[in-house]
Amino acid sequence: MNTVTQAPSLTDDQIGELGQQLRVDAVRAAAAAGSGHPTSSMSAADLVAVLLARHLRYDFDHPEHPGNDHLIFSKGHASPLLYAAYKAAGAITEDELLTTYRKLGGRLEGHPTPKLPWVDVATGSLGQGLPIGVGVAMAGKRLDHLPYRTWVLCGDSELAEGSVWEAFEQAGIEGLDNLTAIIDVNRLGQRGPTRHGWDLDAYARRISAFGWHTLQIDGHDIGAVDAAMAEAGASRGAPTAIIARTRKGKGVAAVEDREGMHGKPVPDAGEAVRELGGVRELRIEVRHPEPAERPAHGGDPKAALPAYDLGDEVATRTAFGEALTVTGTRREDVVVLDGEVGDSTKAELFAKEHPERYIECYIAEQQLIGTAVGIGVCGWQPYAGTFAAFLTRAHDFLRMAAVSRSDLNVFGSHAGVGIGEDGPSQMALEDLAMMRSIHGSTVLYPCDANQTAQLVPAMADRAGITYLRTSRGNTPVIYAPGEEFPIGGSRVLRSGHDDEVTLIGAGVTLHEALTAADRLADHGIRARVIDLYSVKPVDARTLRTAAEDTGRFVTAEDHHPEGGLADAVLESFGNGHPMPLLTRLAVHSMPGSATPKEQLHAAGIDADAITAAARKLVGR
Image (cartoon, rainbow, N blue to C red; front, side, top):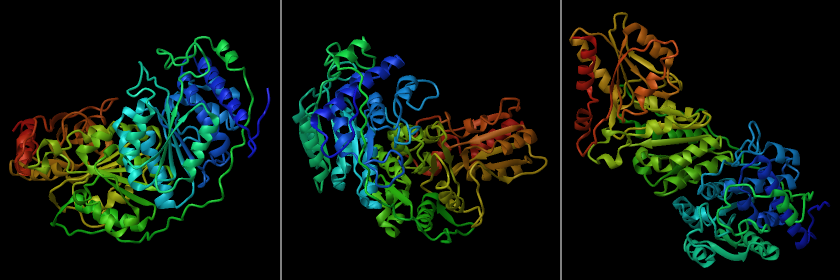
């Protein structure tokens, strides 16, 4: 056993030995855990060895260093290779690698997560590493103006994912010459051969068509790998893809280029280690980055939010865009990302005031969220949005952003049947359920312009994924400028000691509930009205008080009945808290094209329906 320290004179043979060590440690880690993906790690070991020894610039003692390169394993199942590289760099110990990998409470999870300080984002849901890497590279090139490089290790199987091609196009259009995709073309996926096998030309043709510089190499030829990475670093004006032919399970005859070996330990780990030349204790001193500083994020914290007069009719999407623009003035770390609908979401108002911090991702919702996550990795505060209905395309990216511990602000406009004539393809009727289901998320649904204006800057102070739903049409301004709306709160708009029923709405249905309360009063029925603008976390205390006082709830939501407002209300009960009688009004049918007023009536969520439901509950 011997030790190798990084130096300019490090030989190809020494790097080849490092590659073998990475293979051995991947085999050992998976064997100790009884599970894992060693063969997927073994194919890329030489690629990572060259990167670690000669091209990566990273200070493992200071992962927050702004000049550090970023290494993202898009093929996150190859985590044994990543952890073996960390061991070779001295960041983790052999004991941690061999005793905690895939074990309860350990940092070395089956797929990498930011539990480790050197991991930017969680990966493992394939097709996400490159889209996020594009965001990281864009932050370096367009926002921070720092010289770091972003390296993304991709598998060939994940190149069947459409999100990868969204990333290729975005990076090509942006000319991200600080981004290198290393594609491990080992020919075999989980159940058999990949779509293009070892046809490197097939990959090169497609990737170069998106404006990338492409290099085809033997991924086990140390000199060729080194030359390709050097060329990637010197390339200007375009990102580089290193398309490397490799062999899955390289170096162990029992598994090398064999089907059926994916996702399981090597059958005889001891024999495999001997075949690979035994255990090694090589240590690499990874080259540190040059001194660098991120730009300071100032702003004008006293910039006034927009204010709207009581009784005016203003769309919450308009208030959102205007408040977002002011938020960008208050905070110079705010970046807005658009899915090519900024004129409708009103995000384009931000673009006019802060064009240098506005990123157009076009109609590519997965790349929209991926870019936002990558921007957030670099300390910026992203707001990403499109029509709320189209965020469903990016649900997996949002789910994984939560695993990544990302702080991400998401906005969706044109929610519900209230958008009117455009019909069901444009109507978000699932978004509340989708966003509520994300771990640690916050879900907001304002009903008027001043409420919206207060909630927009509050999003940036919230940890995790924060979602704000806006409406297309104008709604009455019912709150005075400057009123406060704490996240997790609600607003009681009608109440009395003799209330018989509670009406609960948010967004457009809140206004319908107010109208219904007036009609009920004409019938001698006192109704409490709650504006549940914070759908998650929900104001359980106010809801429980209303249940004790009235015993009857009518919820009305411009959303499907599953997972939306009513379910948020119900989660406040149980566990010893008596549940009120409840009538849930929601969109049960498939909408068509109609005016907003007709849509609300047809769905049974307008003032008529709320009034009828309340009278039935009360019994008169």
